[in-house]
Length: 484
Ligand code: ADP
Ligand code: MG
Image (cartoon, rainbow, N blue to C red; front, side, top):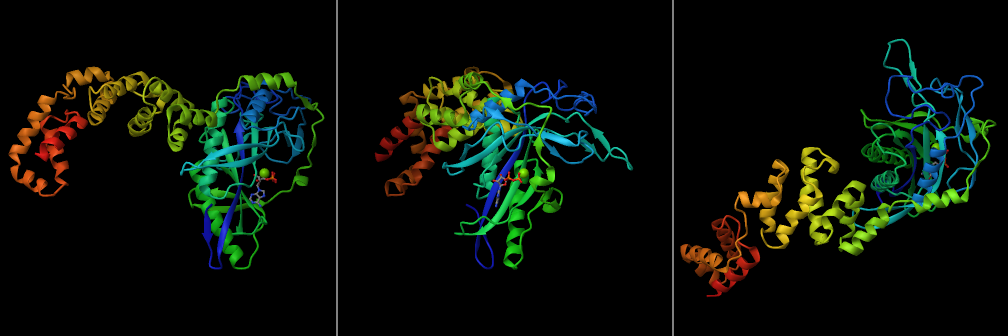
């Protein structure tokens, strides 16, 4: 929970999110036009999307299946009957004058999402509902100084609106929710979760209440925030703004606000519209949507293993810490990569290499795991060389860097550079003797109680062996020799 300290006492944030997720499908929700992102303006527009008179919507079965799949992934109730309604409003990018949406009877009801928090703990956030609706077109204000252009490519593309309960208590929890939801959608293949392209956008609802007050305060809704970082920034700003109003004896007005990325503030956009402003009514062109229970069962049977289950399995089978497991399952590609590395090897060691060295290198290179210069097999072979004591963990890091740079296999680099670990007792002993002889004064100090010098001797012997002495053997032999 994130507390805002006011001058009259502490306040608690209450946050609920509405996420618009674009359904992954070839065609739009009620027409056969392409739902692909981009394209020349108005290249993906059928007569239905442009709302020509007499055109009738025909439901796209794939979009319905995707909504059901998503509902099942959110452990939610699937409603076998749902209804499409017209939500009426006037806007230049909405040629029909109404959006086809679902209002009182959505396709998916209550579900839940488990948040993975930074301290390794989890928290459940309720899902209120998921409904299907059409996206609107796009008004373009930057093409001409005097006119606004309209691009209808997005008009009619299928969206899932996923509404959460007001269960979140901090910006971090809102971020964890969005990350988890995005991961689930990507695992399911129902939305690509790409926030920059707008295929996932969040409306943030936030109110404040005094700590301990069970009643909810009045909320503001910040519309269409398009990155997780902006969601967190908008929450911080808006919480402060509301507390200042409340503490000075004012009231928060329920309204729709915008996040101004340039100025870092939220701005009032319009007073909150009520449902009755939209004159919702069932679309007379569409029958109620009835699902065959067998179809739902079939989709259930083909669901992939989802992040929570995968995480639990990684903890159970590979002995991972909760946090490491969460990091690995956040993207399906990382989880798959990790599993290939860990198979038949020490799972924890594999996790350290993937989340540590590999993710570090990919970050530096600005690459995703799909285009990693070191394959899972190649990283596995490197770990094998550590396990069979051919090289130490320390040397392995240098070998890894060389693998990233050259793309060569670990064994070739070890041979080429002569990095094989020295495990020959005689050779290590000889190096130790030499260092002790050259540092007789320090040996005397050590023996008179200056224990810290042990690390100095280890360092010197390592240096003398080019870092290749087996660390465990070195420690052991050095200890014995120093005892005298
Ligand atoms: P609308 O459709 O008018 O935006 P909803 O009832 O669907 O209204 O709620 C929208 C979102 O607002 C939901 O995510 C819900 O959790 C959240 N919400 C509702 N009341 C509050 C509140 N007092 N403080 C914060 N969030 C709230
Ligand atoms: Mg809303």
